[in-house]
Image (cartoon, rainbow, N blue to C red):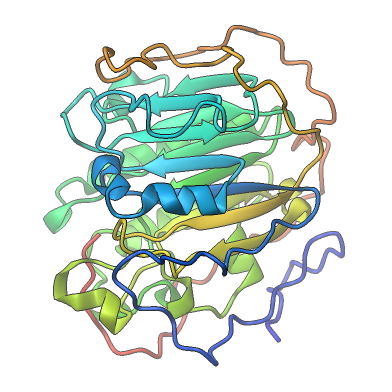
Length: 377
């Protein structure tokens, strides 16, 4: 049985799950499944949120992405690295996902990009940071719902030979300020490809990757600082529930060196939640069977719901300008909602929530038992 971390003994928080089973080998398929019978029904009263780096949405759509989404049917789907130059108007049905939010790169075509598809009507949506220059690559969408802010993000890579490490550090600093500001009103779910393997347990070959993008001491310490928060800690929800998971926790397997077949991966995709929200986290599941549409696999969060599902399919509120394919890369900044009403029922705010607890950030010096292997982010 997995043991909870020191300082996490609050009875209101979910206990750590059993260690993920090692009785069956970790999947190493290279194409998407044809049978999705392993996808279980969502627990009653739960919201299902999925994050997925698709490594080119156009390419992924030809390799099983749509079939996966149809089988999974998340309430909220967060995509990274769409590489879309404009919204893909007919990708997913607006009957199923009436709220389709796109943020495309202005700096370079066919690069980066994020999207959020939601069955539930957002209260408010913003794109990027206040500093427009820091996110000219379409990396950040912030969506406000009744009881939380969703921060859907594709964090910049530090680059080959760490040429963009300074930019990455500036991004992390801006993100902490962004999360701090949001948490003044509601707890936050910070999700996406965060481009960091936080501890040695989070990649197959830590020993040879200490100066590789995503595993530098600078990036790992920066992520620790993000988890510490300013008022209350934030929680790496998967690692909180599965503290010892290793190969079965990896969400990225590079195409080079046959990494998928050898099960040589990295854990780069996360759900980080404000500590007051953690009692509502029912589970975080790595869909490690769903490899092949991308070099990442989807990660999903079950969150105990507090509001009735929105039945306003077809509503035009918060439909991003440029839903048509005529639009260029979305240049949307600031508030893009048709309503400024923020009178939220049942908000769980950081100010009214739990007293501060010890941080749950994993130690950077966590031990690693597997042999080293290359991993390109």
